Length: 304
Image 1 (cartoon, helix red, strand yellow):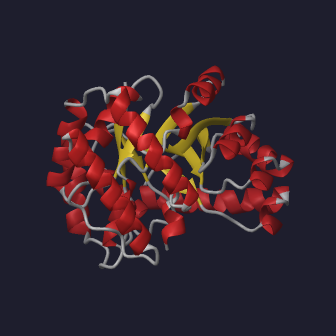
Image 2: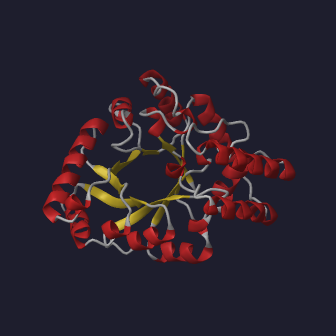
């Protein structure tokens, strides 16, 4: 069964198809978090790089008494830092302490790392630091946010890594293919999925992100809308169906981001009503994957 988690980049920075607008107010963010608490959402993905997100979460949950888990991320750093065991340990420790103050917690249950280049993942100094922060009780679990299969395999090989955050959606099914999925399961790895709606691409009526590659995204959106019409289903319904039914035995937590409490209400309902996406529909979206891969549109960071 897939648990629903809330991505909170929107609570701290201008993000996705709202990247051209000012960040949301703290009051608006609190309304979304109240809705999340109402729906008993337990997981909240955040990062030091997400502006005020950690502060907003810490202020809201400090006295709530609500059972929750923050999934924060340590930012990237230069190889001059991570290649030195002492420098990297100090860098991680400083960010852990800053994050704890913002989130108003005593200890991180899960600590993720945004950095996922192969030299970093295979570095003995990085691995030694991971071992140290777990043994000294700074966190219970370490996770890596990855973008491709090669990074995932390298991350899983690290002794203290037990969690991966992966892109996974109706178009991008690389990490739930049978071969690599068995590898994750055999390795005891928990999977957190992101990019469920690909920043609005997999939503029929959503606007496109303001970015330099908007013309390519517009063409891709037309392809997706044609598939929606062909199959008689809204893209967002198919997207939720795929993650919460087809991936039910693979994904542990699926992250979504919203701009309003009503959007969260609607998405929770989609999770509850999810049904299996038929093979012929999946095959049509697999064909779209080849186009997206060829155009280097899988990672939204490449859209800027």
